[in-house]
Image (cartoon, rainbow, N blue to C red):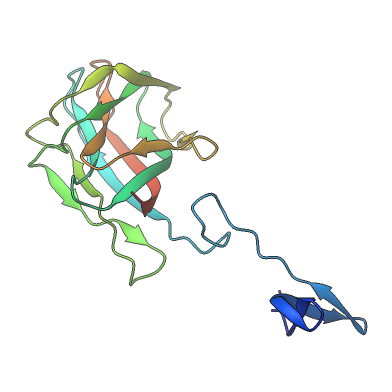
Length: 195
């Protein structure tokens, strides 16, 4: 895409300027759309964290992956989607629940990001040994999937209506049944905006 190559005054001789681009000998106004957070579309960094969950415990209520937005982060996290790829032979259900911390123990993983300079504030724990506190099942979202060996990942997308995590709020992906697939991969995708 070509960038604007000129500008004109809104009111000839005075006033603010608008960007223009020359096409076929004529200058046309250039507009750069922005999202609701004020970022030019396509420029805001998106983060993702992915981990393999090997032999998870066959216990309902076990947190497979938890994310947490620290209380003093200065940002809101907007969860855009969750991908789950599981090898197994039975139906598996999960529940997303709001938490007041991210748990501890287990494996902490470093999120990936498109722009290296933009460090995420959200923390991610895989199979935390100390379960996240303050689980609020009343706002739980049930995710159900039919599993077959070698099945493609199932994507739960919230891009149109992201799940918002304010400062001091977390999100846990809990097993909603006692089935234990042999191997699973869970991926969270989110963006962070000013609080």
